[in-house]
Image (tube, rainbow, N blue to C red):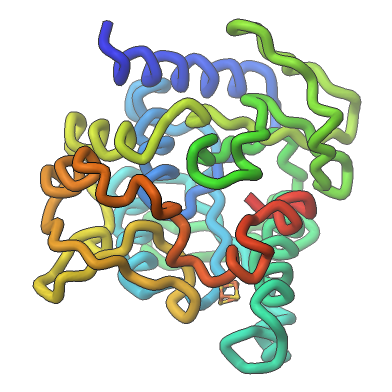
Length: 293
Ligand code: SF4
């Protein structure tokens, strides 16, 4: 078994463990390459059908092609897709793009708070209607107690401190020093009532592994990852006002795999194009402690 097959098997095992241990389970889908690989693995784990909702936090500032891709795939793969957003902050223009607050405050409202409210069921949830292709208000406000997330340990400093099964308290806060140990393939999946658990099946994957897997499986991805002739492409996707493209002439998946193998980006952080990371002291730790992905 080669390395890609090993990590694929381990991730599928973790997804199945999560499904058998958490009654109210959901998977976060940011529409980026990592969470789309995670979605692909979930489809493999359950033979083409994803038996839990996919949750997307819509900041309202995502690059439009991302939303088009999300809706197209949700219809094509019959995904049980749910989105939530911080409607109050958007209505009151309490956002960075409106010029009223800092990036960190904006991420805290449009991402962290929206995520916490959507997961807890205190915020409005919208669910795709496969007959119309539109979203209807979802009347289910049951809190999700287990949430599968596509973070990778090599992606960013605070993510390297994660466990595969990582508990959060009732406020969704993350106590980094109080995580249970995980030896070999023994995962702690029983937690006190009220605990919310983040599940991370992709911790062992690198950026190169992700692209090699996309290449091997022919997974559809957003066109923004590829150079359209201007010598630029996105290496990591996010909100339009805060995400920069990198210089690259990679026009397809094969080109990206080759480019990564050259080590061109080995000294440049994958999320270096995300302005909010810089505003958080070069990482995401303070946002993540509060419940961000
Ligand atoms: S990435 Fe930018 S637009 Fe998006 S929530 Fe953060 S500050 Fe706001």
